[in-house]
Length: 628
Image (cartoon, helix red, strand yellow):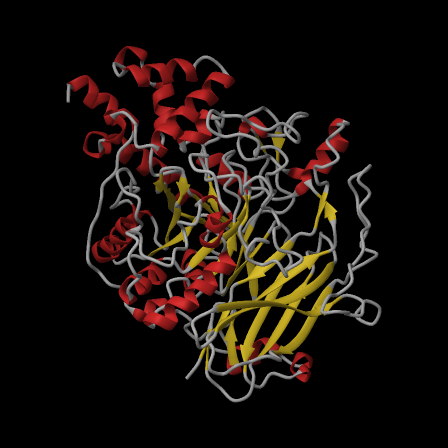
């Protein structure tokens, strides 16, 4: 490599690759460590584990100019000016934030944009440089080409050579860590160090967000891991093990919302296509205790193809089921089975029945995946996926066509989602430990408060006393493992509306289990709903809660629904010999979407087929039942 090429590569990006054989062991998989009755979490903390700034190559190329400091200021509740010159501020600050800029190309496009043109000799890089400087349209085309080249492993060697670029990445990474450290304020606001491991199998999205429990004194010993020349997650787990062995610190990885993986995120086999071994299953569960279930690019809780009897399956799937992330491969219905969380939970039971280990014993969180540096999920304060779709009159109906992608980047976006964490304090350590033990849940943007405990002797009268203390003393919280007991398991369920949001429609228990033949099943139970005396279930269905949305004004009223829903529910179809999981899904009454707010704000006439209302929801992490 020439000196000039070396200089340019160093200017662009780089990484180190740690390897190691540290095995976290089975105890890490079952991190349901009991929280003592006098130390259990008192409140839920709200945050985002998936936010991009100008250091992400796609975010910068699509016009984002806000850096990590602006992202942290915004998350803490300060007013900032967006990349398109609009004032932006959260109505309610977040409690924590993980800035997860892409490891592949960390600060690459920003550095290319700012580089002296005379230093650029590679023809493709020179083309992209000129396009970046030609205006928004050219910048977006250049970035789309760069992303497509990454998906097809056709990036220039000056970008993919990690050794040549390591010095520059070290400077960018250290600067990022210093910024995060300045804004971390234990007890008030937690700023995590992290990055997004940008793993791709051609166009299939296999990204993971990596979160460090530690501060810069440890995290600065490594660089974000690049994913070039691999399509398997094992290298990331090696990196995490080596980091922990080298520094004594801790990390966890959160797989990206899986709806654009074309079945590759939650496979029944190992990545090579062979039978998944117990060791592989155990290792995955140990490193990836959580999964992102909802975000801007759709929702991956359930799909009607796998759950035809679930009337609420399919939320946030429209447009995203066309193909993988880059539209390299069109999606077939059969591919969906490896791309949705409920199916993954069922597959986990099937693999456990065969091997004794469950690779998909994970909790669930939501996050935004916003590429604007602005973490906001409010429908009336939605700043879009990237700066090109920050508030403007065209974004609701316009489908972006960026080279290889078409017809899915307008109203299909969701203003989603949140990571809700039951932790003992607002610190890196307490929040991380709660994530590791899976005591977390996801919402699509609402701040409803959900809690669930599973045990063997909970009764309705328990709700009259200190049921939280009793939940920990006599059972397990969300994310826990319920060992065999006497009778049928019972669940204490509590849902409180967002104090600034919509009333609640219903709470449901979603159950999955595997029979003796190894076949997986599922069933959705309506367990408590508003106006139960008037809305009497018939034929296994609860009548609709109704609809107060006025789309002409983008408003609704809380004259229907309930401010809270609580119950103790026992499984009426329990089989003590069958492995099972249970999670709670809570739906709000219908409310306007961000598209409806845009329609009113900009006086738009939209296609009648575009949905203007939705039922936002929350999903708890499962509780697993293990037979004796």
